[in-house]
Length: 462
Image (tube, rainbow, N blue to C red; front, side):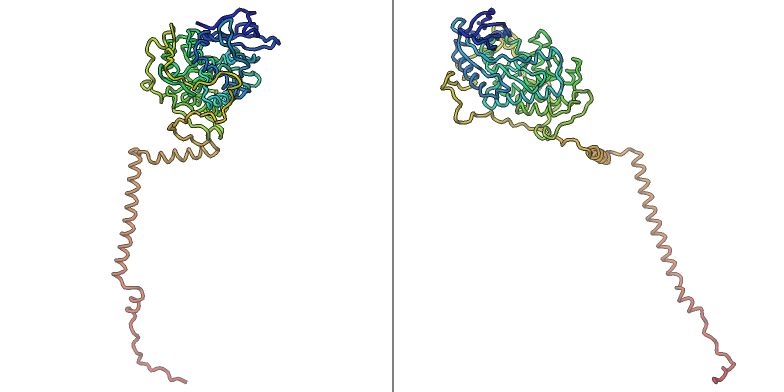
């Protein structure tokens, strides 16, 4: 049983008058409505089957309570939650958001790089807060992300709870709308999905914001579910290559960040939404131009570690395709049936009311995931080219030499040997000559003949 599709003028719970249908997802339907005081609100009705399942209502109650503990500047808080007797449908009420969704903005134009960076930082703030309370969104997409066009950092995220209803009561309409933004583990039976699924969806949303189109080739307009499943479970195409197919220039410098966020294994993705936002927004605005170079800010380079390149995810390492009858078959159910005997993903919470107050003890946080990663090189500085050149020269000096180089070295060696040998020989000859001839002083004294006494007597002294 799907959510009621009401005509304008219908009244819910005796207080909310329906004005127009805003969106229909099978298990949920969202309407523009007004209160008795003419206040515009967004009214979301759930399928009556949700109200008949205690486990589903417990999940919904918990999500309502936890959503209202998230930062109000980024998350749409629930004004009221209840049950409509006339339609037998649970409902929630939020303020009407008077800024366009990302889906509406993208129809006008792709967002600029700096705009996407501002959007991601705000989105990361609310996702990290939700993950710390163990409340993943699991339904993030352009239609529930609202952005102020004049200030892209002003973001409102809606629909934290409805994803639970859609997963417990899957319908073809809801599945086709959500499929292009789901992570692999969300469509694999028996595989639990956690905060990492939101990181995957946030990367797809960022790509959509930059290009105005889905990352998946199979999700252009009409969703080709079998084709999308093959893409989801197959090797990833580099983000820059996919953007080029769509006619949008995107630097290959961004490929590593997208490859890590879109990894098949949740443990290989960024550990938080803030890490993803820091990596992508840490690039200069020129990074969206083809051929531009990486220009990380110091804060971003210290906070994150680069991901492996896209080709590091081999096709053989990708998860096995889903068996027929699970996600590929939309009727009767695109998801594995919910088993009441299985433990619910979250601990049951008490019903809404004054008794539901924040606990005095801190809420447990998600466990850290150990990821073996390579260290990030330091940011480029004016001295970097000189260091790089020195490294290159050192590498060349150890490379094998050519035959001409070897011959030149041999000739130099022979010349050196001859020079040393000639010098030694010259010294040897000179030394032998000195030993064979008397010294100058000795020969002179030997050649002088003593004077012969004269026969003429010397004259007498006066």
